Amino acid sequence: MYDLPTRYTGVIMASSILEPKSQRYGDADVFSVVIEPDDPFLLIKLEEAEQESKELASKMVYKTMDYDYQVDSLRPSKMIDGCGLRFESRYSPRLSADLCDIYNENEFLHKRVQICAVPTTLKDGNMYLSMNIIETVEVIQSEEDWTLELATADNDF
Image 1 (spheres, rainbow, N blue to C red):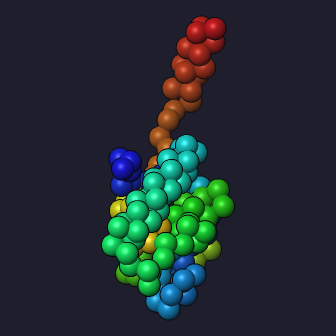
Image 2 (tube, one colour):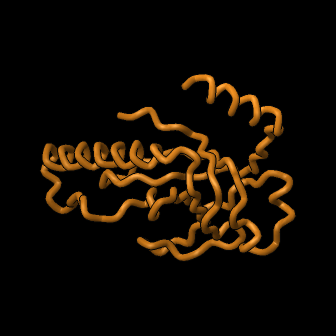
């Protein structure tokens, strides 16, 4: 199995952090956030981990001869939402101090955040990211640092 991270950084594309929404599958309401991750290769890594998990689940069903339960490999991923990562929780996530002052769902959009989440595997092999904490990430890099990086990059060629 893949070594999956527990902290994910990116920009919020969609959210239902203040009030839970109906889940795509099932009847429980969930809090959710979709971020565009800083690392685009993370999507590929998570898709591969989920595919491996589905294959393992289908082998387990075959071994136990549990014909009443079938692995639905065509069921869409609960982790990947277009080009973003979806995080879900039945409980309200803990927010950092600056996010606690937000009272309108739209104010979360386009904020750069770090989400602490646990990749969780369901019985059918599908996976989802169960979020616990959402905190803002400040990009602290001075103009001097950028100039130094550009100069170094020019000398590498």
